[in-house]
Image 1 (tube, rainbow, N blue to C red):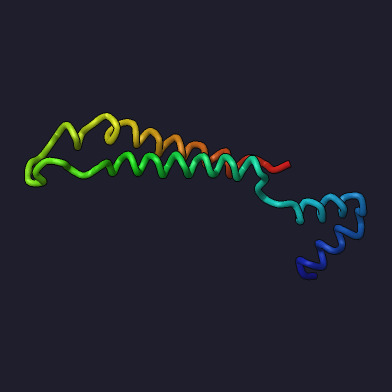
Image 2: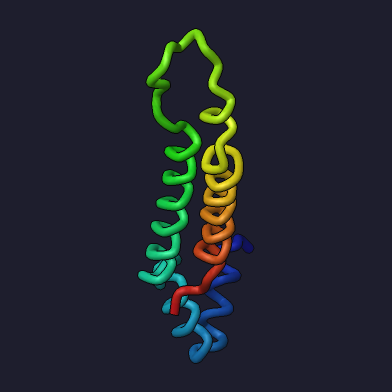
Length: 98
């Protein structure tokens, strides 16, 4: 007996369960709330990477400016935004669509 035949037998023996199985198989995996959370998470990740890159140096490129390279935004804020975006992605994927 193949897998499809056994699934067919289960559907035939329990008709009330068959409707719910067919309904669940056609339901979308992600709902609008999932997509909204995913978009917010991706936006936070992108903003974090953009802040990490920073701007170009206005002064001589041969001179190392430690205050610009090791600023609060590049070292602390941008990694926190990236981690927050990744943390939002987890419930966005695992949240069940209704």
